[in-house]
Each structure stands twice: as structure tokens, then as C-alpha cells.
Amino acid sequence: MNPNPNIRWISQSSSTSNTNYDAAAVPALTSIEMEAIADRTIERYATKALKRNGKGVSIVWFRNDLRVLDNEALVKAWVSADIVLPVYCVDPRLFGTTYHFGFPKTGGTFSDCLCRNEFKNRKFFHFSAHFGVELFTTYIFVVVISYRGILEQGENKKLFNLLPISALRTQFLIECLADLKKNLMKKGLNLLIKHGKPEDIIPSLAKSFQAHTVYAQKETCSEEVNVEKSVSKGLRQVILQSSSTGPKLQFVWGTTMYHIDDLPFNTSSLPDIYTQFRKSVEAKCEVRACIKLPASLGPAPSVDDWGNLPSFDQFGLQPHEAGSLPTFLFKEDTLCVSKGMKFVGGESAALSRVHEYFWKKDLLKVYKETRNGMLGPDYSTKFSPWLASGSISPRYIYEEVMRYEKERVANDSTYWVLFELIWRDYFRFLSIKCGNSIFHLGGPRDVQLKWSQDQKLFESWRDGSTGYPLIDANMKELSMTGFMSNRGRQIVCSFLVRDMGLDWGMGAEWFETCLLDYDPCSNYGNWTYGAGVGNDPREDRYFSIPKQAKTYDPEGEYVAYWLPQLKRLPKEKRNFPDYLHYIRQVVPLKHGNAPRNFSQEKAAQSRRSNFGGKQTRSYRP
View 1 (cartoon, rainbow, N blue to C red):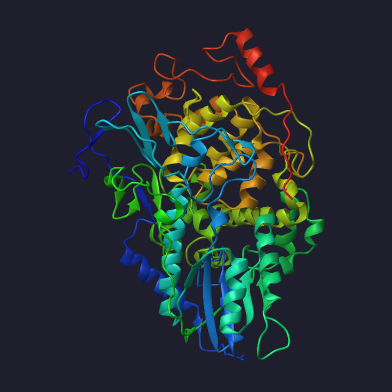
View 2: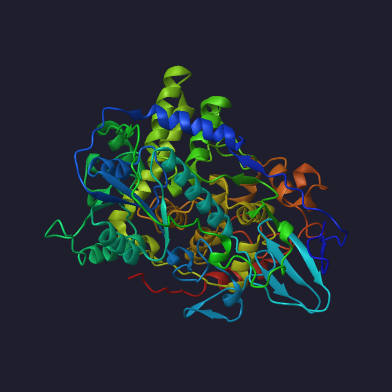
């Protein structure tokens, strides 16, 4: 039933249709099943051997470590005090814009951006119909995460506030916080949710509760480190009645599989080549065991108002006028993903995905053979969104791999999961060594290359309208689900920087907007490598689209799934349709024959235009 009789939903074919919500849930388990798995797993790591040896109140400042299991900050806070206050700050800066190009981050709205061409003195690219609204004389095109249609609204045509693609990550965060709160309550605590900047909230709470220590996970990139410095400065202004000094801010390391203190070298001497790093840590380091938990973390402090979980309207993700968007685009106040995969946020879902992939479906033993797939939920582990939010510990994954090898089988596939986790470690440590150079145009090696910032070319890449089905399908999957396969990320990165000649930072910041598994170290580490400006000079590979398509989508199943108009073509033609069956290609390929709709002269002109002008970007302070 249409919730608003003044709005009629029309499909692109101008015939009335209903959205088919057939996205695969990851993990594919019920909430009851996930809760049971999480409870059993967390209980397995509980111990009565831990004893408290401190007094007073300590604070746990949750950041990107939204879990109970293997959370050293949480356990240290419990050991050091009688009472623990867990806090999460909904920092408005998480919902701002990216540094150079002004794309929305984890939330926020596009409406202000659409009303002007400049945003924070940086060029802002108009978001076309695939991601937002595009005004025409008759219709307003609206895209909400996964479904494109036309809204016909009687007499008035209005510019709406939009649901940006990054609303998916906002929803994932909300689910992570809800699950963390639930798991803490099962352990005798609760989660205080405060809206505002941590440098304002944490010192104020430390003063109110007379907390002697604030525990938090250490971050490595400049935006997060600057917040840490501000919180530390604020705590120095707090006076404790029981001490001549203010509250301490104590950081713990909890983001990597290998602990930073166990590395066989200082981060300043980190090898420039991943293989050297991997071989060194594998030979000389051991992965630390997961931190054991006390049976109970209580008692919780007396708090009048524990706060509410953030909601979409707090981030400007709802239209200003009630009823101005059809409410059936939400399902029980939850964004609906109609195709691909719908990731469930939270520690319970993360632990359940490990159980599902390793133990229930027994897929770990074939991971290396299937990991380069692109279609479906089970060609790879899909752990990355929970790793990025800290909903799961990489050390827990390591221990489960070890258990699997002992109880079932040890082979190249079981090792390869750890191989990928070491890559993730490497990028995290690299962000310490290289600092803000991972965000600079020339990368860690300050490579001087010529780049373009052509707006129309970027929009075609962003919107999945390049004329190359493999590129377009991957970009549509990203916009609709917040996820893209590892193989897909390498292909679309290579196309943006090698074939289009565009500033790699545009792609990196768009990924920052869209990815559920965004974290600055892995995202910018991978983009600098893909652009050939990373610290390893050998990482300068070109991904041939024809070769990649023939190897990883030989029958065109993937492109036909995301580009349904290609389904009617023979399988061998789906990745290589002519312009009568698909849109024209926007650029020629760097290697290979000129595309069908480019003359040789036109191709040469396009190449000179794309790579002709060197662009500069301001540096992050």
C-alpha cells in the first residue's frame, strides 16, 4: 500500500512495480542464532582468575573497538578500578566531509552541497541521479541506496534532503553500538552514549565521576591522533579531589594481529616491501593470545541518563518534511538493501560470521581458491566491515584459524586468511612510519606524476557509467551495498588512475564515503599502491579490463547481475557489448586496441587531455 497517496512510485520502464528485497544477509543467521553464538563465544573467554587491584572509577572511551571480547582497554579499566564507565562519543566530525573533495563521510546530507558548486573552498562534484537527485522539468529522480525510480508528486517538485550512500555505514555503526550496549549489559555494565566531541565529553565525565584513568585504543592517523591530543589537553585541566594530578589517559594497542611492541624493528624502520615485513614478523614474532574476560564487569556506575542510540534524523538523513519521501524505502526504520549483500553490524554478527564461514559452511579450507570471486556472500570471509569497526579482534580470527587447522585441516587457504590479516597489519604500521604522506598526491615517495581532476570523467566512474561493464558493475555494487570485492577494488582503482588518468585521491575519498569497511590505513594504503605512489616502487601494476573480465567473470554473471540490461546478451558478449546494447565508453584503455566508439585520433586526444595537466592538492596539517 502506498503510504502517501500523493506520491506514485514508477519503475524505469514506466510500469508500476514493487522493490524485491532479495539481498543476502551476512551472516545468514537469525538474531537469536547470532546472540547464542556470541554468548557462547564470549563465555569461552571468561575467567575467574582475574582480580581487581584498584579503587575508584575508570572510563573506557570506545572508538574503533566496539567489542567486549579481546578488548584490552575494557579489561584494564576493570582491573584498575571498582567501577567502570564505558562511553561512546558520537563525534559530529565523523559525519562531515572528506578532506580534499568534500564528499560526505559516515553520514550527513547532500542538500547543502547541491545548492552550490564550491564546498569548503574545494571543488564539489554534483551528485547525479545514481546517488542523489537530479532536477529535470518534470521529474525528480531519487536514489535511496539500492533502487532507482521516478517520483511523481502532483503539482509541486521539491529539492529534498537526501539519504547519502554513506547512510549504510551509519546504519552499520548504529547496529554496532546497539550490540555493544547489549553485550556490556550482559556483563553487568552499560554504554553511555553522548553526542559531541570527545575533547569536550571525556574531560567533563572524568570530572563528574572523579575518574582517575581513561582507557582507549590507540589510533595512528592524523584526524584521530589530533582528537587524542585534544582529549589529553582537556584532562590536564581536570582536578581530582583525591589526587594532586588530573586523570591519566592510557592508550592500549588493539588494532592489529601482531602487537606493535612485538615487532622486530621500530615502525620508523618498517620495511618498504610487504614481503620483507611479512617474512620478518612470521619468523620472529608470535601473535598474543586474546585477553581473558572476568565473569562480570559490573557494577555499573549510577547514571541518570545513559543516552540513546544515534538515529538517522540526527545526521540529517531524513527529509525535512514528514512524508516527503515514500516510507516504504525504509523497513521498520531500517534502510533496505535490495541486491547484493546486507551486512549486519555488531560484535554478535561478527563472531557469528566467523562461526558460519569457518565451522558451519566449512569454507575456510577453500578460501584461497575462491577469494578472487565477485558475486555472492561466500567467495571470501567478508570479515572486513567488522574489523574496521573493531567489532572483532584480528587475534580472535587468528585463534579460530589455529583451531580450525587443528580440528579440521591446515592448507594454503587457512594460511591465506592470515596472510591477508598481515597485509592489514602492514598498512596500519605503515601509517605510523609515513604519517600524512599516505594522503598526499605524491604518496610516501613524493612521486611527481601528472593527474587530471576532470569532473565528468570522475562522475562516470563514480556513477558506474563508464561504458565498461566490469567497472560499472563494481561501482554499482559499491553504491548499493557499501562493499566491493578485493579484485574489484584493484580493477576500478587501476582504471581510474591508469586509463582515466584521474587523481587517485578522488577515488580514495569516494571509497571513504561509501565503504562499510573503511579505515584510513587500509584504504589509503591500498590506493597509494594502486596509483604507483606507495612506498614500494615495484607496486605499479596495470589491470587489463579484458583480461580481468575473461579471468574472473568469463560468463558475464557478475556484470549481468548488477547491469540487468546485459542479461539478454550471449554470455561471451556481456563484458564486451557494442554501443547498441550498452552505453559508450568514456575513455580508451591505456593498453590494448582503441575501444569500438573511439577513433584513433579521438583516443589520442582523450589521452593527452586526461594526462595533460598536473594537479596539486593542499597537504593535511
